[in-house]
Length: 208
Image 1: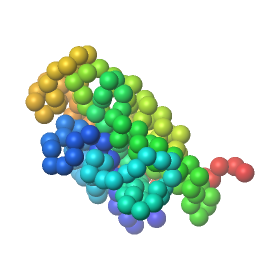
Image 2: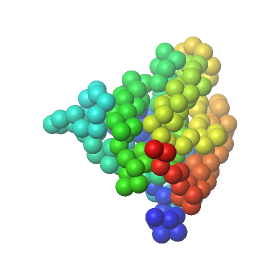
Image 3: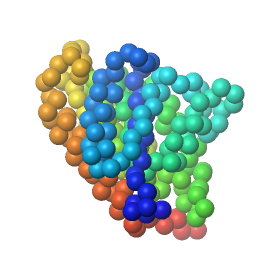
Image 4: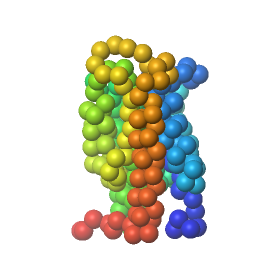
């Protein structure tokens, strides 16, 4: 379905370790990206992974009570995915890692044209944390998403931190917000541009 027939849809998976309704620094920065997408006509949905029962595994369905299949269906109905994660000990959160492990099943799932289901979808990353390691988190998550089949545009990320060591959180300190917001707006623009390009000229199925 072409972009002229249907608006783009985006799903944000917030991998904060804080369940609702606790304030989330990661959510706050992700909302800046979401606003940039909405300005371009994209419908946006957020999922806070800490609110769901998603057991560990590498299958789309892991039995009774597993809430991942609902998230998986959202991914298949969206052209844009944003994984948002805090930095903990210089790494993505455990929930971000769990999301990627559950998405591993998508490697063997194909559409009606035998393309991996992540093909012709774009992805990006949002990172927050009061310690260093944002670029490492971005590279880990983006690398995994590319392996799964997503297209990762150039500069499809934004982050905020105030350098190594403990310190204030994003919601507590305005320093660096302008840069993070500018980068978030560029991220939104790039995600939409590449999603529309793929809609017009889809990636073909892998050669047999």
